[in-house]
Every structure is written in structure tokens, then in C-alpha cells.
Image 1 (cartoon, helix red, strand yellow):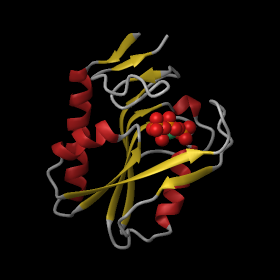
Image 2 (spheres, rainbow, N blue to C red):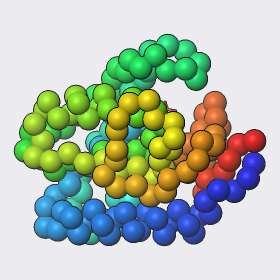
Image 3 (tube, rainbow, N blue to C red):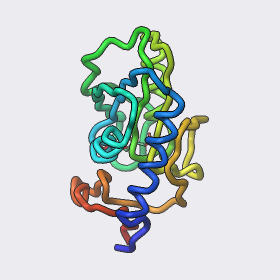
Length: 168
Ligand code: PRP
């Protein structure tokens, strides 16, 4: 494994994202929506660095089809427990790859009429995009490497690593 982002680098990026989001929402309450499982560690750190009041909820999504080839169809395997109407919502994701998951999720969440809907991702792989999707807040753009750690897995392993590593 090769280190891509150290714990210190990640924490610096998470602090900067928390500052920017807190500034943009100043006195408002933000509902953080974490996309399980990968985002849980990033969300825990981000939430504790934010300076506006936050509430938290989670969704879990699965794409139809098997293996690494996504069919492009997504479904909820765990939905939110919180109504979104009138809320300021920030979706928290660990990584954006093809963009298929977030494009689907944002379309579904917008239909629930939040006051605002933004997306923060720690990592972004713009070269892998299959659909047009851009996050509002991005920690770091990376090349097309298979990365693990800080929530990201390979067959459920390595999520607990403090850094992000390229799996060779
Ligand atoms: C990853 C990641 C995103 C999605 C991004 O989750 O956390 O949710 O893939 O891919 P896309 O942009 O191509 O749609 P994964 O399906 O690996 O599940 P996990 O978070 O439970 O590991």
C-alpha cells in the first residue's frame, strides 16, 4: 500500500471543509446526511469540527448489478428517518467516482423539498465520471487509483486506517 493522504493532511482538509460549510450556513442548523458505509468516519470528524448546530442522519444505497461494473441503477437499502422539508441539508460522501450514486440520491432528496441541498465529499475522482455531477465542497481531487482507509474499504477491510492509501 502506498500512502496518498496522511492523517494530518486529511484532518487539515476536514477542518477547512468544516470551516467553509459553517461559514456558508452561519447561524443556521445543518442536517448532515451521511452515505453509509464509507462516509461514517469522515462525517464523525466533519461534524465535530463544525461550528453551526448540526443534526445527523444516514442513508445507505446499493447499485444494481454485481462486481465493479455499476449498472447505473441505484436503490435505497436504508432511507432517512428525518423529514427534509425546509431543512438545510448537506450530503456527506467519502468519494465520488462515476457520480451515479450521488446524482440519484440528490434527485430523490430534492423531491422532498429541503430548503437547500449541498454535497461535500472528501475525495473526488473527476476522471471516472459517467454522469454529470459536481460536489459543492471537495476535500481533494485524486487520479484514478483504488484507495482505502478513512472509511474506504476493499472487501470491508481497511476502513479503520487513519490515512488514505493506494492499494496496489
Ligand atoms: C462508494 C462511495 C460512494 C459510491 C461512489 O460506496 O462511498 O457512495 O461508491 O461511487 P459512484 O460515484 O460511482 O456512484 P460503496 O458502493 O463502495 O459502498 P460503501 O460506502 O459501503 O463502501
